[in-house]
Length: 245
Image 1 (tube, rainbow, N blue to C red):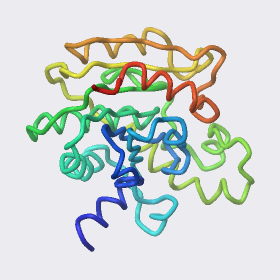
Image 2: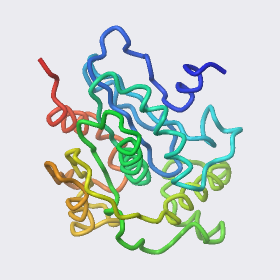
Image 3: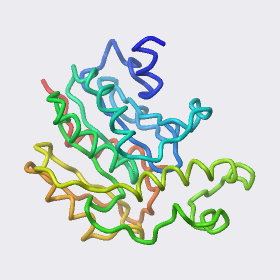
C-alpha cells in the first residue's frame, strides 16, 4: 500500500479539491459514525478541502478492528496529518471527535509541525472533567437503549453495537494529561438542547487555549445537531476560518 493510499484510507476527501484548495478542514466524527455521516464539503467553498477521518471498524474499513484507545488513534492520525499541513488548516470534531481532534493537535505540537489555525470542538465537555454515566460496560440491551440510533432498523443496530461499544471505550478510558494550553484559538459548539453537556462543561475548554476562545450554541438543537445543520455549521466555520488574501 502506497503512502498516499494509506493516508486516504484514514482521511477521506484528501486530494478531492487538489486544484482549488487553499485551506483544509479535518473532520473528526462522533462515536459510532463514519466519514459519510458528515457532509460539510457541500456547504463550504471549493477553496476548502474537507478531509474526514475514517477510523477502522466502520464503512469501507468495516473488516478492521475498531480502536479502543484514544492514544492509539492519535498515534496513527498525527503523523498522517503532519504530512498534509502544507495549507492552512483547521479541525472540526464532534463529541468523541472533539477529544481526538484536541489530542491530535497536542501531538502535532510535540512533533513540531504546523498547528491548526483553529479548533472547532463540538458537543463534548472539556478534558479533565469527569464523565457522566459510563456506558461502555453496559450489557447490550441497556447500551442499545441509550444509543442514538434514530431511523436505524433493529438488525443494523445490532451490527453497529460493537463499534459503538469500542468508541465509547475509547472515550471513557481516556485519561487527560496536563500540558500547556494550545496556542490555537478554540471555537466550542453545541446544540442548546444537548442534555449530554452543560454550559460549565463547555466553558471549561477555555483553559486549554492561550489564544481566542468562542462558545456558540445552535438554538433548539440536540446532541447530534450536526445532522441537518451542515449549512449553519459551515457558515460558523468559515466566519472564523477566513480565506486569506
